[in-house]
Image 1: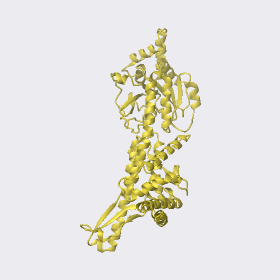
Image 2: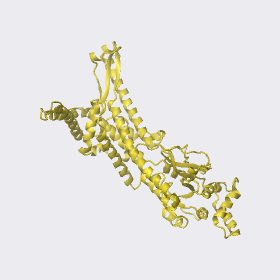
Image 3: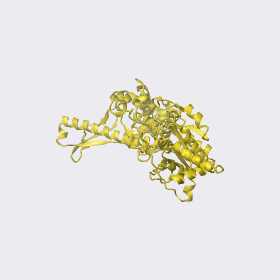
Image 4: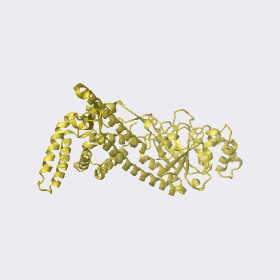
Length: 512
């Protein structure tokens, strides 16, 4: 996990190690998306760590925003106040330079900072120029949803006077209009490089591209930036593996969860009480499953550095997937009847095959045939019950201290684990599509991927070669095997997550 960026005012660290960390000051006019770009770039979704607001002038100091991986600060970004009086500041610089025209223009910038430090007149300009004079590179942020105006040239000219490596970043704060081409024509006169980066839509690859662009403006930081990119790409791959394990843990926990209630001697003699308690047990059992599913989904959020409080429920998700006991859930996710029948037949064949092996093959495969037929028949029968769970009838053998125990779980519908998988895949897809600069509620919305009358689950598209390892794994879980083989099932899930990532990255633009 990333180290929490500090919100303290910037205090230079005298250590030699920190002094070698490449630093980039993010500058521009107020409310052009500087903080949003930083939040997405370093993956900080917590508004208390990087404040993103529509209120002008929210950033009033210089904040150090480190990019930290494995406890190591690789790059440091500086969130600065926006330019406030750039035109008047440039006038001061030009007058100062005319007095000593043979001096480099950066000397006029130094004189400006010294003359106005701790004064109100140019407080914002001093704060943003100080780290640049200390050696930070420059990321100049503009808002392409607003047209270029001549007074912006004052800001760009001041930054050019510093002589520091600098890149212009074209951000799109709103979608109402796009003046990117107009901005690009003017920015080319003042900056070494210009790149577009939509802070609210950017995905992992856009982050990597922007970081790689820093190589082109600051050759001295090449080794550290290359190391940063390599570590980010390696960590992203590792996240995919960890997320696959989280999904597998969720499926295993839900499939092996059991619940029970003990009836008193009096209740055990009354059928209506047994029925009431059984129904109550079913409700509590399904609630427990949903809570477990939610807990594992939050682990996925944490892996991708989002916060639990970002998540909310959406009506479309509630209707189509929020209730594991609803008919809609089972129509949207999991396998269709034909696929489920084939999968169940395969599961029966796997079980039957084990019987064949137990008798040394003397049955000549009869066990596999019978097992396959049994699985097929069971799936056709259970497919009508949707999400019904197994509530055991009270038996004499279930006598406990207080009376009779009624047991629930696991759901008897063989589609249950496929539904869990598909829901996790939808959650993953929208999770990796969400930029960290967004401060609106994170709505897991099925309307962006669903089509009326069509299953949206990934599992329904799996070829048999992918389905078989999962069928085997589900069967071992259902049979209560303590250490089921998971390597092949893990690989199927990991490959599916990788496919989702590839599809997301190919999209020209994410939905807002």
